[in-house]
Image (cartoon, rainbow, N blue to C red; front, side, top):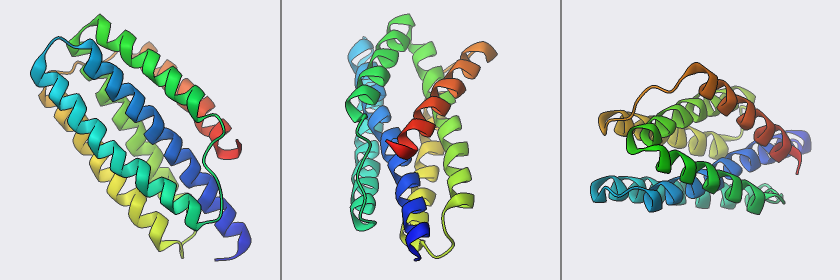
Length: 171
């Protein structure tokens, strides 16, 4: 790849890595806040799958000669707090939060497939697999009893994600 394409791929993979940092925090907090043992296992399983994504994106960023976000501790703390709040509201809302988060992440990953250089087959393969896994997480949360969140909450989630992705692209 040309240097400009390599930088673009690295920035996009850094954003995806931040998303996985947030997923770890979110699922960990939700597992801690539920009293339902089966749901706790559901969140722990999802977190384990997200660990794979975290490793893939981290390794790819290194291969591209770049670094992860300098703000990862901030992203983790924020997502952990959101996960705790969602979990404390109740299991159906917590699962609804997973559904909407994963839907937004899936759309975000689809946009990355349009933005990644055509020749970056390694990054593309990672993003395609992550997209499939995120869709499965949303379907699992729906099947487990998640509810549809109000439009205002979805909008706030999109706004927060936009701030995170825009910042993580550079920092």
